[in-house]
Image (cartoon, rainbow, N blue to C red):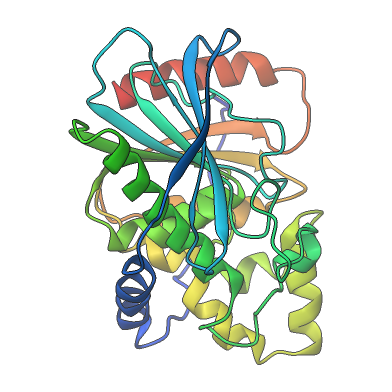
Length: 303
């Protein structure tokens, strides 16, 4: 872990008075339609040492979403995990960076991003992050969060013996997970890695190389967009998360401003654990050593 003083907890971002009501209504609306999931391919993956299924299900957008599902070949499955990706999508297949070898894991691809490409949602990060941002009802992050719930339902239908469901998400997936988890009591533990979308008023004051830069520039031209972003602030949502949560943050990060990452951690309402990396979204000399140490702690957290 990177040593040194940590940023002081910021004052919380302003939140809409109907934040909770909006998200509860969103969950009710977007989890009601049937999942209609279907497995298209099954195979053994020697690289992962796991059985893999490629499947699709009905997205909250009304289109089809793609996911990989992996599971151990030799043990009964009682542990499940939803693993969400960064804003680059997941074009190359599932990864196993979440250290929970006995778990069945579903790797959903978010609406409009690679493998869940859409004729209506642009796949380019700087365009995707602005899609539908004129209204809280149409903003793409609403549907991305809803597909976390829907993919969890697919996993639980596929493995009805699952007794514990956890979440792991990095960058985009960390922020989307923070938005989704307060409204779904099936989840028991979570890991947010370099979480995005935390404390929009602070993060949008910092130029970056990630999706936030497109939002920052739009807000400079159209400040009324801040009203919509208030419903999609991961730090606001984190104040409603009461399950044990492990957060990996970076002191330096060109893509996701660290001030927003720390804001998500500080806002969490339940038991929490912090792991501070020297940097994120960039190579650095001690990267492999720090991540290996983090993964040992994370494995114990998810055990």
